[in-house]
Length: 389
Image 1 (cartoon, rainbow, N blue to C red):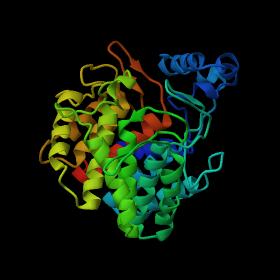
Image 2: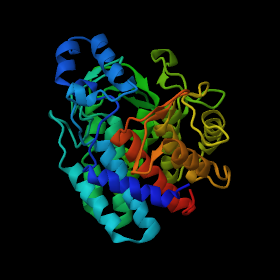
Image 3: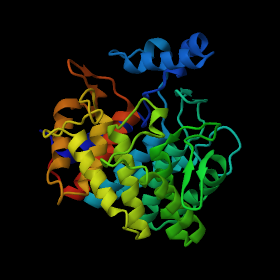
């Protein structure tokens, strides 16, 4: 089996050759044909996106869907490159990471917003909302901010911190407020009229704001971050999981792999930067639930807490990231997830496949969903745990 470092470098090389652009999981409505046929209502749009997403063969070329550069993907690749620099000392990795950050600086979504923000390069119909191509959202903006914060921490260049500072207006003024009390704050996924409270959104925002507040020594922002994080932590179930939404009945998703990992990683980042560790017991219990219910002993990722298939590459990448920092408590778990991913979903040309279903592999290659996440995860694993995969 290839070691994680060489696979990470091969994935970065292949992705670089594509200019870090590719297909996206939900990009079906980038087809002019599908927009014409299905663009008039929520259910036709959802159906069109799902057909393209779930097809065992890639329909995008036939449908005229072009490859695009996803801001979240650029951020993940940048973080992967920075970890390769940390692991090797090779300045070429850091230089390339900063080139990708400059590309992110140049991306401006349509509309007038109160601060910097980023979105997906395709029209997106969810069960709860519709967003036109480029509409900024909280999750993409958070992941982009994490890359800039990593770059500031690594290089000390204030230009990267300043970009994050410019996003505070978006978080503070543009996103729909879904709950606001003295102790808790919940913000919406999108700057659109909506009521669905997606659990990972508020804690991702809270972690970013806490990091920026610590650098800027801004007590008001630090308080805002604490309320955002507290809202999510308090929604942990008595069996140590988080539902996708609050209330749980607002979504068909109960507990899934990578959103659970998002919450845990964001809580860890918040505790580290704030120095507030009083939620550590809840974090540890959530981490144990994640390890027990979302990964097989082989390292194979589970799709849901109660459902094994499909075994999705995004879930694998998230598990590698989360458990790479917990080698003492979960020895070799990150390594086993790496090994399973490379053995089952890696093509030696330098890319990862989308999923392994019960009877077949879905060999779709999605630049952000597959390669960006695995470049980020494998690079982080190597930096924290060494070369062996």
